[in-house]
Amino acid sequence: MTRKIVSWLACMAVFLFTLNSCVHDEMSSSGQPVSNEYTNLSLWKQDEKYIKNVMKIYAENEDEIRKSGGTPLWNYATTSESFDESFVAVPIVSGDRVTSVLKIPRHGRKVYFYYTNDPQDIEFFQGLVFARTKKAAKADASYAQSERTSCTRQSIAVWIPDNESSPDPSSGSGHWSTRSYIKCIQLIDNCVGIVNANGVCEMGGGNEGYDYSGGGDEGNNEEDNIISQLQNYPCAESLVQQLPNLDNELANAMRQIFQNNENYNITFRSRSNMGNIDGVTFTSHSNTEGFTAIISLNDQVLTNATKEYILVTMYHEVIHAFLDYEKFRLGDTAFQDQYPGVIVGYDYTADGTVVNRYTYIDGHQQLIPFLTTLQNILSAYNPNLPHDVVVAMARTGIATTTQAQYQLNSNEKNTTLGNHKGTKCP
Image 1: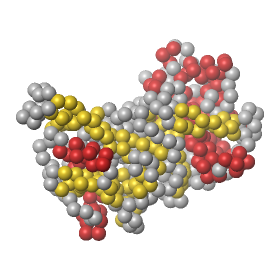
Image 2: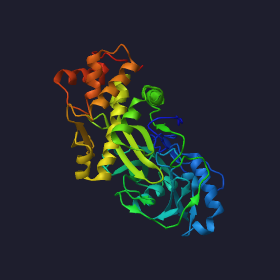
Image 3: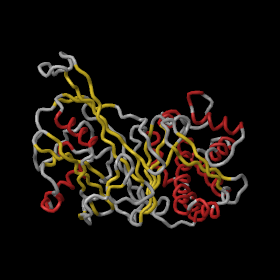
């Protein structure tokens, strides 16, 4: 569910990724219909609105866009966990072979068409379109990412029979072969084209794009938007929707302390295999879409933490996101000059992702307004929350804590221990 919310963190625009969701557990192919009408024949839910809008643009400009032989099979297109009208990849088929992949990202009010022939992409779509028996496979969470690249992976398992006369897994021998499609978003650097699985920007055909009027949000939108991909976590989903209606002092504090007037684009989503890290944030910036952050929250926190803990974690990650961008924009030396109260460190998630970590020097003038603001937000949300718990949660993640504060914070992080003072999610 996408919900537009007004007046939060100075001018937000939409930048959405959402969780992979299967619509079929297993499927057998019986042909590849080609039609101007769209029917989802993939193994996952797709951004059908974007696919249909792009199909129309392609049909109107096919002579100009078409760069190779073959037919685009839109019914097997994948938006690769995106539901914000931002991206789609379409297999190009000639005979019984996928020969290339047409990738169509949207930037603002323009869409761009690029043909690629990455062997892994072609193998993925070859299995998706032509494999007699296939099923969605769990994505490999260990796929490497960096602080400048965020990747999503969709995987299928294709049945390879030992004997074509017995192709059914239930009656013949064989093995499952896993194939994956990876979409990487290059962050911070403004890549208008396609980013391959290694994080390299492929500028593609170099066209100036085609006008997109399908309803996707563009940069510099006067309305503010916030996107939640936490539909599988109703408690956290509700908190995201409430964020702008809670205490808005944080927005004022960010403007005052960071002296920033950029547009903000904030997306919250869940992520597994993060170990003890509550959240990681990837940031990017462009002249048209402003400052963008994709905030991934630990699925264990979303499942076991109190509402107050999840709320303050969201705010902590917004702060980290902005500091991450500022460090890139300014460079190390200028960053320390502008933010002398911030200590920069590094950490690793359980899957090996490197993330920046920022803490404030105790007592520094840049820290005090944030701590006060975070404490006020927590107390306003739950007036019955003990003050020492409020202080502990506000400090953890952006300032040093005592052992007692660490324990109080841990109690709110894991309600299964039974020592929490905050509100347990139903």
